Length: 91
Image (cartoon, rainbow, N blue to C red; front, side, top):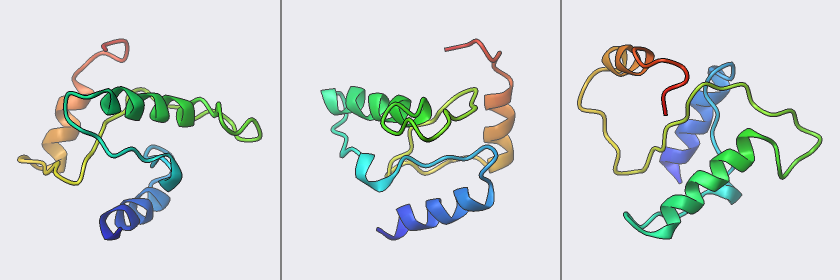
């Protein structure tokens, strides 16, 4: 879809720190359902290259679930400031 394509384009311009789960690994999530767990598992499988042994695991500190209904209510700067305020070992 259009939003996904825009995210992929954005990630390609910021590939050092922005990664998008491949389209075939995307999960339609029902809030509060197991699909939320499945989406997390898909992110981890992609991040650790478990489905593609030819690819190196991603280097990352945190991941963020974004949905088509996720609209930030603060600026990107504020989001970055808040996320970076947490220690790297925070969960």
